[in-house]
Length: 328
Image 1 (tube, helix red, strand yellow):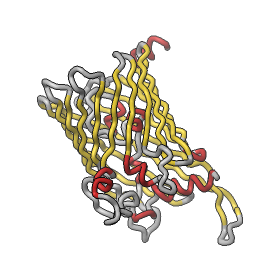
Image 2 (cartoon, rainbow, N blue to C red; image 1 turned 90 degrees about the vertical axis):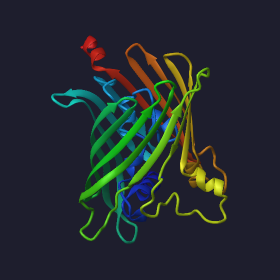
Image 3 (cartoon, helix red, strand yellow; image 1 turned 60 degrees about the vertical axis):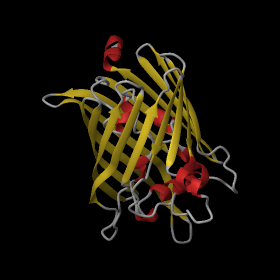
Image 4 (cartoon, helix red, strand yellow; image 1 turned 45 degrees about the vertical axis):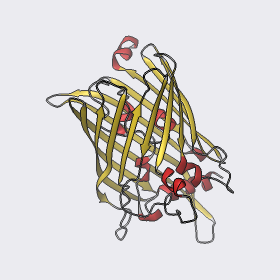
């Protein structure tokens, strides 16, 4: 069963699928993002982990913050993320992060299906982020080095994201846009392979009605398609237009219960219809979680229902270097 789940994950996100690779770059990098439907480019609270989604979200408000996420995926697949913001001389505040995915050991077989050994598969991305504000507008850039390795084969790429965000000076309202994964391959899996990068354009908005304890986030993704996509290619005239449109959107809601507790809920329609089984969704596409602040520590949890096989949990903790200095 481990091999089946892991191979499914590798097929979906590998470069041989739909002639496109490095799909792991679009996976959620934090518990909160996972809870808000898997994408969020318009956050208004300077969450350090949100900078990976849109580099314009962060200014210098996260200086000294340290963020760590652990995501135990299906079949022994494990993902980790670590992010911090520091003050670079002559440049100012910058954010640095790493995301690493380990698929564990997989059986290697011959042409008859006999197991002859095992092999490993890993993905990683290192990134630096910088932003600059002018009035209510902020622009930002992520510079990323990514790598994907399956057995003895590997591919590496240099990419960057360009993001912008507008924050209303009078209302709790933001609009964000990001162009993701611009760049080029440094090396490919094989000499004859032409792996393309998962170019993506996202636009989103986050708003909080003045007298309500709710904050709403709506994100549109894949606004520019440069190649066939597995999750969109099965659209047909037999599918309602409303259903086709919803596949491009994710929705998130935060219930704010004071300054220290927040409950989050999300819905991703594409994930729901893609992983439905015999026209039954079994809760796929629905996510929920919470954010809890205790002193200088912030704990985040997300439960994201993927398909009938079960849900995927994200665990995160955020603190500041000043809090760690008090301990050590």
